[in-house]
Image (cartoon, rainbow, N blue to C red; front, top):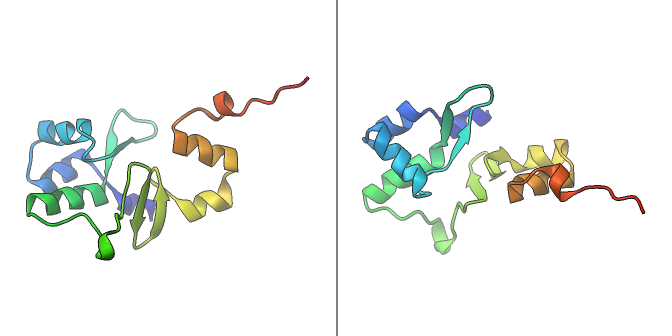
Length: 119
């Protein structure tokens, strides 16, 4: 189910009608978020960002009714529910500790944030 949230670089470029260099420029400008594919040197790209960028090119607005934003650099609201940094927030609450979720949100190593000190 989570794979529906992402597309490959080739698919993203095709959806946007641009070449791969332009896609990478969009990522560099923070218009489209990417995430590494575990075990490879490739990245995957948020489908919602691709669709929002397509809408911008057509003059559409990236806002929900009543002016609320559907996405930020940290969160994304989809039909599948809220997501934090590309991961389903409900699944995170059921399977991860608060420290692990904080590390994900802050983009830091858990061990660097939450060391146990004995005194």
